[in-house]
Amino acid sequence: MKQKNIIHTGTLALALMLCLILVSGCKNFLEIPLPTDKLAADGAYLTDNSAGAVITGILSSAASNSAYGGSNNNESIGYRTSLYIDDFQLINPNSTSNTAYLTSGVFHANTLTAAYSTQWSVLYKQIYYANLAIEGITANQGKLVNKNQWLGEALFIRAFSYFDLINLYGDVPLATTSNYLANNVLARSSKALVVTQMINDLKQAESLLGTTYLNGLSVVTPNRARPNQFVASALLARVYLYNGEWANAEAAAAKVINNTTAYELVAPGLAFLANSRETLWALAPMANTGATFVRDYGLYNAGMPAQAPTSANMATFSMTPISESLFNSFEANDARVTNWLRLTITTASPTAGRFYFPNKYKTNVVGAEFNIVLRLAEQYLIRAESRARLNNLSGAKTDVDAVRNRASLGGITATTQAEMINAVLKERRTELFSEFGHRFYDLKRTGLIDAVMNVAAPLKGGTWSGFKQIWPIPATDVIANPNLTQAPEYN
Image 1: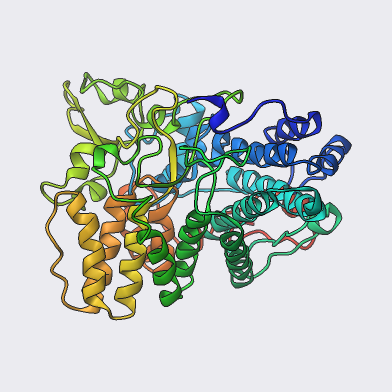
Image 2: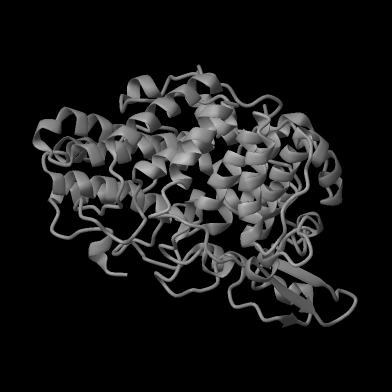
């Protein structure tokens, strides 16, 4: 992948300074930045080159941060939520061999404390820099030719960050400015208020962004690594679905599905390749920022052989196969089993067994695969569920069957609304497993999580209570901000 396709060279020194700051850490929630942060931000929106570099810096930071499977890939939302519910298991759940195993065990056993809140800090840092960008671009829009692209991208990033925050933490502080004095005393806003902000941001982004994929120079690129109008529509469809706005979700998903010039369902083995026609938006390895392969490969594969002598030996490659429950949800002859799962067999007793691992990402070759965040199959399932809830069963069947046919399965036979909704939810599980928290979020939004986890938690050696569907936030933030409360039952 050539550098010019995603990030450009020769940008202003101030913009480069901000990009470096973006990939550095923040200690506390929306912490006041160093003076150089603000100086960089104030001067980084005077030209299109520097404004584009700032947004590139935010996307680069997202591509490499732990919430989305960057360097600390065992902290990613997809991994941790899959362990937390009923999709993943630990090979040796009581192991204390390393920190990663200990941390994974906390999520696997549903014994979270405020010490395990990485996503909170990462996502709020992302929002802070999106807010800085929105303010800087708006203040200097008269100087920027491509202001619509930069502003649309920043608004999208803010909405995308809030989506995970509310689904992990429930009601959260709604920060829409870079005013640290105000942000550091914010109380939790209702989830409904945050959703309204997300919808407004995405609708504005949809109106500002163009229909093609552009790079940091606002030049058309084959890389689908920055949001365009259809990407904003896709996330908007997801937000509408989660908010129970079925007609709006159907319409937004249809915008994406109907763009057959750009998007189509592809064979399962091709779906996760870089810039596949199924990709709507992906986080791509960024040049000059520690470019690497998609970290899911290292998390679930890492070159594990098809046979291992013991489970302990197998765990040196990957400690997290899928659960028996998830495996049993696949039907016979499902092409996703052969293409998106990988089998390793242990050969020594008493631990002989068959272990299936996620295998959507198959290589450590940099640039061969991108970390896909939004893809077309989800849009079909969003529209299918929306149609089912609107009692358009034939339309729902058409959409579900499109996804199933790609998996070499026949059409569904659901005849009632309840059967159709259940069929869609089952298809979401087998289609979207291991990706960005879908299963955890689906169980919560449909009210099924307590029933599922009351069965699943004991099988993992833990217990379940309803309060655990909301994750705790950092104790340091609760102490520092008198208006911010911890999630119930975690005090």
